[in-house]
Image (cartoon, rainbow, N blue to C red; front, top):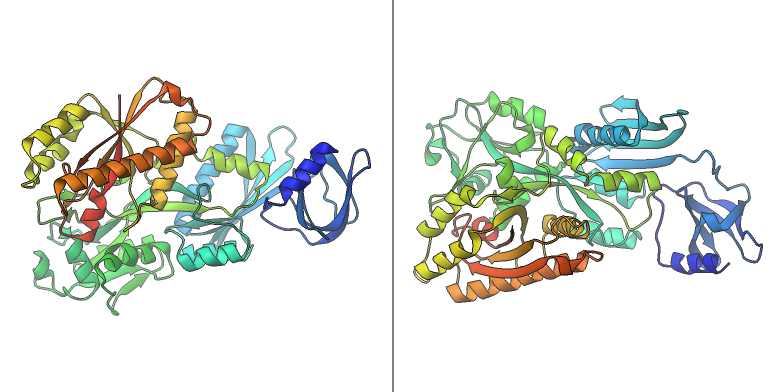
Length: 519
């Protein structure tokens, strides 16, 4: 009875179960008969009941009670049902591949039941007696609809190609879904990147982010201004309802305070986009690295001499400025056990391999040897300002030379000390690695860098504070880690090693970062 009362009290602050069943009268009675709860059953996730009572909504552990009444579920034939809604780029290929790998690992039998342009459904059966234990439905809509379905309680998880917006956050709180920007609510599933592309016949060799922004805004209208032929520029983008279409505007135009020109060719998906751009010698567009098709990627250039391509490593480290994470958003409520196991599996090394084979960038941390940093060290010397002397560059080389760089990088929201969404996910991932003991008896150094605006010494101090902020966030998340087994340190070199030109907001944002180096 004590356990039951504890479960009831805990339930007052616990939100549960993804898909509610029809409200029915039920009575939950403790096994010794001393405690009885009556009300309408709002949901059951295979382990916990959620009941609307005269005391409000209560969540009760099913192991401590017996259920009586017409609304009681069949415990022996319980089927976990999960609905995912959102970006087809996630739901059409990546999620089914991950679900198949999960089924193989768990010795389950996976069967495709529905396959239409707008929905996929898979049934999961036990391998021995073919008992149905799970239904996974993927609604192939778009990022906006994914969030809408989540807020309307018509989906358990939203699949998105952009971060949640402030209005959506507020509506989620009002709907009782909790803070969807809190740790654990937004999960970065994989990484992608926005890449400027042209037809293979276009002779243009590169484009700066400022030029790209001006072209999308209609301020540059002729290829001759970009080193190409004397011909008008045809702008191509994904549809405005898609996450990629929205991210294209958010990442390229908004930082410069520009608006998208009205005459733009829009495409519903990556395949249609790639086909149109590849056949138009005067096309310029933004698409994803994973769906580039037969188009030709333009490297992002800068007046200071940088040229960046969306290579796998550059995307993973976020050194490439237009990264595009693939998100899963989960409300603050309890998923069925099978669903929790699937979500946990997504961080498994075998799942990361599936992500990579599907054409996306995985998040498995990699260690980069010091001799692979040649371009970065050369840029540090070439771009050193008057205030950054040889002594500081030599100190940086002496400090980092014995170490290896981890591909996990941390950046902050614009004008804020708050980590951005991808970095918050990185903090959780690194913390889990610490808890698993993957870095026991090693030295991890959180190294802060800054942009070149302002005095060099001030920039180094700001970078050091950012490095300490990241270290605290990781330590706070690594609740069960044996931190005494790990040497965690902070260091900063300010503007000493820029990744991009400081003449744009994007370049300054890329340069403001915290890297992880280890020995």
